[in-house]
Image (cartoon, rainbow, N blue to C red; front, side, top):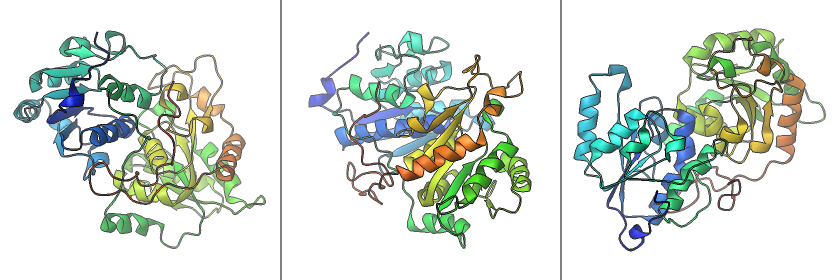
Length: 380
C-alpha cells in the first residue's frame, strides 16, 4: 500500500478524474477535496463522473472543468457510451471515492496509469482490486469529509481551509429567492425528507418543533419554510395541517437542489434528518440541527455542525437499515422541545458568514457562505 506519493509535486497531473456518482451528501462533502486539488494544481483539467441525482451540485462549479454524467435511469444501455467518454478522457490520475464494483470498473476503463482508491477494509465488491494504489485504511466512523481529504494527503497536496465553492449566477439566485418573497425574517429551514424512510422525523413532531420556534419566547419568532422534493409533498401537507395556524411556506416539490444554495443562505437556522440538503445547508453557512436515528453523526454530521446533532437514544442505534422494523422508535425519541432548544442555541452562537462570493479565477477566494474556519478543524 502506498499512502503518499510526492511525484506530482514537481510535475502535476494534466488530466484528473474524480469518481463519485450518487449520494448528494457525499458529493457535497467531496467538494473540499476538489478545492484542495484546484489550489494545488491550478492548470490541471479536472473532471467528475456523476449521476443526474447529484449533477446539479456540480453544475457550473468554478473549480471543475468537466462533468461526465452516467444516465442511470437508462441503464444498462447508457453504461457503454458512458464508459466510452471515460476512456476518451485520457486521464492520467483517477480518484475512486465511490468504493464499489461499478466505480472500480469505471476507474479501470479509464486506463489511467495512476488510480487511487480506498483500502480493502473500506471498500465493497472487491473495489480495491481496480486501484493501482490505495490510501491508508480509514476508521469506519470517521467523518466522510475527512476520509475524502485523505486522498489529498496521499497526494501531498497542501492543506487548505475547508471550502465548498457553491455559488449561483445572479439569475439563478433571483429565481431561488423569489420563493421567499414576502416572508418575514428570520427564516427557519425545515428539511422534511430523506432517501431512507428510517431517517424521517414524524410530521407531528416536526410541527411541534416549528410551533415552538414560531413563538416569540423572548426572541424573534422564526418563519418556517418547508423544504423537500416532490416525493415529500404528502409529508409537507401533513406538517402544514399540524401547524395550527402558524404562518409557514410549503416549498416541497417547488425547488431544485441549486435553489437550496440561495435559500439556505437566507435562513437563520435549519433542522432536519440525515439527507443531502442537510449538507447543502452546512456548505451554505446555515447552522443546521441534524436528527439521527438509523445512521450515525460520527460519520456523517454536516461540516461545522457536529455539536448540533441529536440522536434517538436506543440500543439499536445506528442500525443502518433503510426500513425500520420498529416504526422508527429512535426518531420518536427525539423530543420536539429539544430540537427547538438546540435551534435556539445555534442562533445564539452563530458565527458571521464567510465571504459572499468566490473569485472566478481558479484557486481564488473563499466559498460562498463558508465559515472562515482553519484547515481541518474537525479531522479525527
